[in-house]
Figure 1 (cartoon, one colour):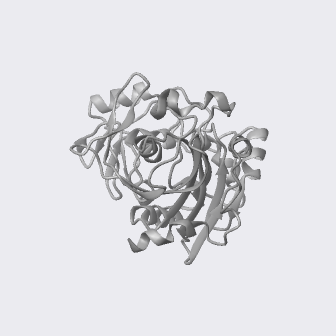
Figure 2 (cartoon, helix red, strand yellow):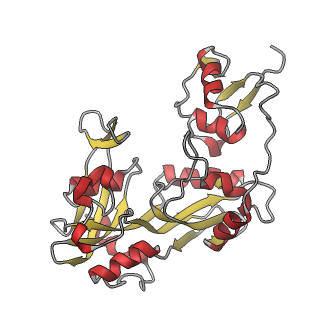
Length: 332
């Protein structure tokens, strides 16, 4: 068929859903149109039919049919409002020739969807600076989770950073405020998680038989009697909503997390902000050019307000090594 072409999946796109791949390359291609191309077998991977949610692998050959005049197939610089561009640049924690680390604000989705038109992925052209390439996402944060997010500035850097995440040589530290105080005050949560549909949308549930292994280290850094606690959390695996599901399983849901904690995630009498109290505090990641890159993100205003109301001190923030609270676990 005239106009059919084949593209090889690049290393930096390994693990990406097929529909997300098309969204990045051909933003004007509607989801309905893509589904039709998939149903009729016009889009194939390595000669085989494929579903929209399938994860791509580096080196696979993707067949792309003619997409029609209404779908502009050339990549273009996306327009970003001056306000969004200024706000995003102001949240840079680290920038060099290969990597940018930003402090993602709560409420900003990392990627778009059917009902999500404003998202970080659509703003990344504001962070091109002197690079010919558009920054690339190499990991994710939930929409309502704030904190450190690393971006690759070129394809080779993206491949190395993605490989580091897959090899589990990246360390990520989160801070959270939870309802109640977990017992014991520190430990390792090993609880397999599986996706389950529900009235509030898809959520992760404990399922030893069908779930994927998920492990989290936790430690109480401070507490307000039995009402609430400040936790340090380090995920050893990277499952969807892992920290939220694991905290809820401990009986201490993250404050503001109605999806996993229900009414118990809101301390009504305390007058606290109702936003999610989960913050990606720090990241330590192998730099593409060698050595380790570490970045630390300040707490957002709603969590600072909760810290003040509950009497938590900003302990731990003055440590030269933010991961020191968990160093003992690696000898367990």
